[in-house]
Amino acid sequence: MSQQKIIDCLACGMSVSFGVVNCPKCDNRLDLQHDGSTVTIDIAHNRETVRDALLKLQRNMKAARETNAQNLRVIVGSGRIREEVLGLLYDLRSRETIIDFNQDENPGAVTIKLKP
Ligand SMILES: [Zn+2]
Image (cartoon, rainbow, N blue to C red; front, side):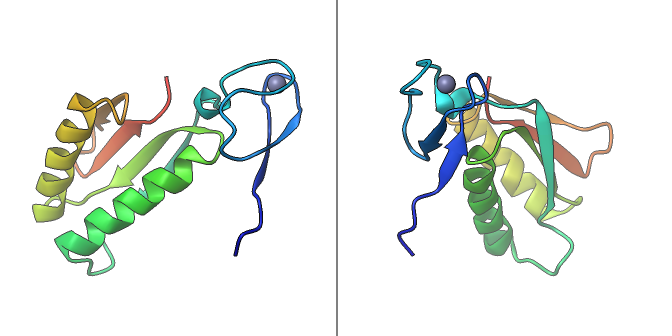
């Protein structure tokens, strides 16, 4: 599957191949554009192992970056998956791979800010 994914520049509406960093028309940073929305995923309630859950998280972070969403809300449950995910997120934040993350009022969910 080598079909090019096309996205629309949120600033000027130009259609651009995904992966292009600056819009050829208005020069906006396409990889930083978002509409402020949040995508929610559940990685802890389908009998996932810790490894499954982390893979699922990484896959979904990548997928969410390719949409107009700003945040990824992850349902992590209350067990080891949650601990491992928080460990990974501290690491990703220190390497500036993600902007930030916050634990919800509901301790079983974490919201990851992917774009500034
Ligand atoms: Zn543009």
